[in-house]
Every structure is written in structure tokens, then in C-alpha cells.
Length: 156
Image 1 (cartoon, rainbow, N blue to C red):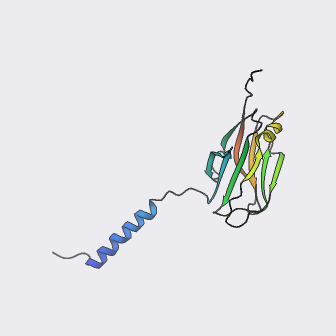
Image 2 (cartoon, one colour):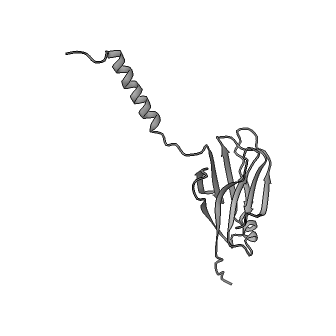
Image 3 (cartoon, one colour):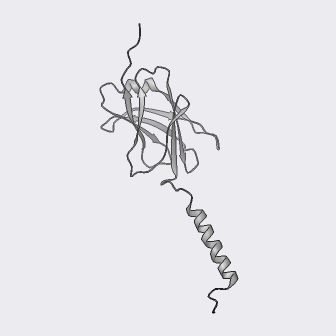
């Protein structure tokens, strides 16, 4: 019988196939930018930036006087410079913008704002949107649509 492949060639082929299988087994998320949103230090939203999908909905309580929102945005594993969190209305008009200092290299420096400040902006607006901007981005990045849960009745 005629030999089709030499032993060294067959071993190299098997190694190549195994390496390809290993490399393709990792999940690839579209977009190298990612973000995390925390409500009172509890992760409520984590996503990779992708222009083709709809924004996630972030539910906030209207009567959460002490709640705090924290956002971490990563540009390919790096923290941006001249960072801003922006709330816009349904006409894409800026209602409020928070500016944040640049973080030291390698230090995770979340951007924080009070939920009651966001709730105060909702007066007369049907919907609000949460955006991020930085020197590294050419346009504001939509992170989430904000849904405000109705106030709960309080006992007197």
C-alpha cells in the first residue's frame, strides 16, 4: 500500500488542527469596548459595545433617594480620558452631563452619579438615555435606555 503522508507531516497536521480548534473555541464578542453598570455596588448590566443591537434597559426606582449608579467603561482594556456620563431625552437633547477626572494607569476608576439626580431629569420626559463619551470616542456611546419604576406608596 502506498503511504499518503509521512509521519512528521501527519503529526504537524494534527497539531495544526488541534491549535485551530482551541483558538476558535473562545467566544468572541463583537467590539473591543465593554462597560459595566452597578447600582449600589451590585452589577446590573454588563455588555460589549455593538452598534447593531438595541440598548439594554436600565430600571431605576423613582423613590431611591440614596441609590448610586457606577459605570466602568473599557476601551480595549484601557480607561478613557476626558470621560463623561450624559443623560439625553427622547429628542437626543442633553439634559445633564457629568465630567470625570482621568484615572491613573491601571486603576479602575468608576464614574458615579446619584439616581435621584437622574430621576429629577425625567420630569416631563417620556424616555431617558444613558450615554458615555471620552476623548477616545468620535461620538457619544449609548449604554442603556432608562426606565423609571413608579414610586411606591410609603407608610405614614
